[in-house]
Length: 121
Image 1 (cartoon, rainbow, N blue to C red):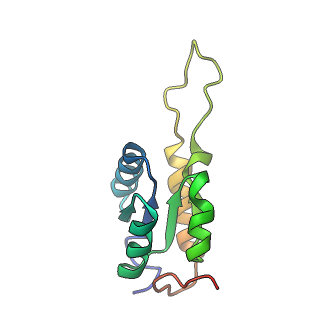
Image 2: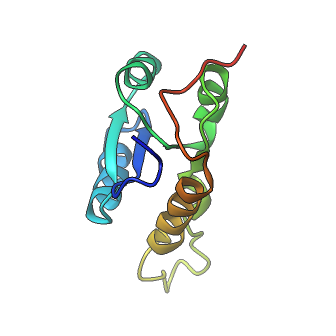
């Protein structure tokens, strides 16, 4: 299977169940093939059992991901918008469009065929 498959393969790695569900839902609605992991053992198992092109995670987990694979990483927290005025919050606190664009771009920029993540030595 190549990276140019119709459904970009994304692995979402987050310990927060609610955040994990929301990220997976946003990606599935946008027609991504999504696998999820809530802890490091889930992440390792998912990397062994399925192919993926991009990993989505939070700032605190980037180091863990880099320790075990070399796949492109999207930090979902980079797309959370600050509440500039508490009295007039923006309609959304998450820039979904920019997030999905970043995942698509990393998928398109990755090598032409990507197998299961190779371990970092």
